[in-house]
Image (cartoon, rainbow, N blue to C red):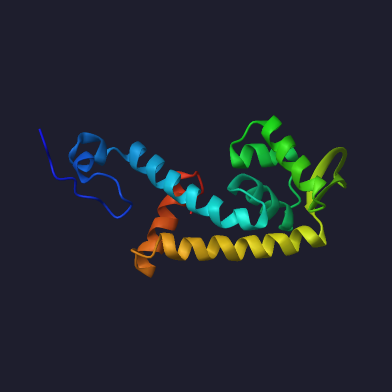
Length: 157
């Protein structure tokens, strides 16, 4: 049976959007996440980063001084993945591991000056990507989506 394929905004075949999966929240979240990650990773590639390494760098550049365990829990990544990400950022001179003044047995991950500069550049690229990726939403819709996603991610508002 021949059918004329109607393409969606992202180039996929429209007929799949007429199936039951199109109303499945888990599928929609996964698909939206995949599209967003692909675009963000492309934008961050110019800085030699991906979303995961950028997330670690951004948290290290904050004044929160996270431990590797805290990074693992917050980013929902296996501790071995965090070690590899921190090692990669440390090799580039963007982060360092420093003893936690509260507990000298534990290290915190802190951005260096070069890491903070890289984080600022990367943040600008991510912001630019998001502006384009979410351009079909109004400012109010973006604010609502952000609020809803924070709630789904476990943040008490």
